[in-house]
Image 1 (cartoon, one colour):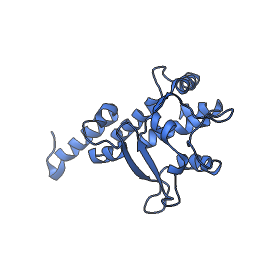
Image 2 (cartoon, one colour):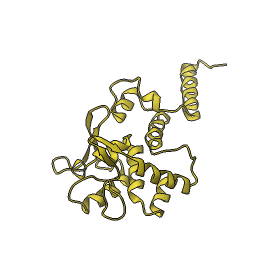
Image 3 (cartoon, rainbow, N blue to C red):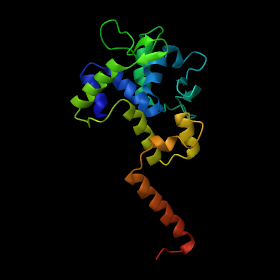
Image 4 (cartoon, rainbow, N blue to C red):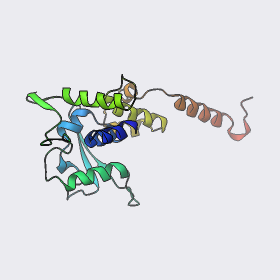
Length: 200
């Protein structure tokens, strides 16, 4: 949240939106800045979904934006993306916030986007927000995975959220936290004391 607030203060709202995409949809910067097209978000044929294309794993999936009760799953993110889509006919969803609003990456070689300029701007926002200097744009995706661990998502849910093919991958991104330890201890104690079998 501190990053998002500071990015908006610095007239870089696209970075604020991008950080939320990384956090919520667990996407890499290539997928957010070099692949995510306006046509992927709420197309006419699937108005309550977003198409996610993962360049690294070559996986593609559709993420629901509205639950079965008709409630928005990502209300803040949807409000920002809806506003962007209203003002743009096509092309990349997230562009630079100044000048001719060109793409964030450059392509010195075909199919190899360069994120040097983006990384510098992200670091400027991180420092201006007083956040830890070792953070980078990748931290938002990893933070989303860690939040999933804290929320006690199952392995299948983590695989679906991160679009991974094997359960060996998500633990690389999901940091161990004291909340996970605490939740695990509570579950163990609850199991131990069921049916009057006290742990003492």
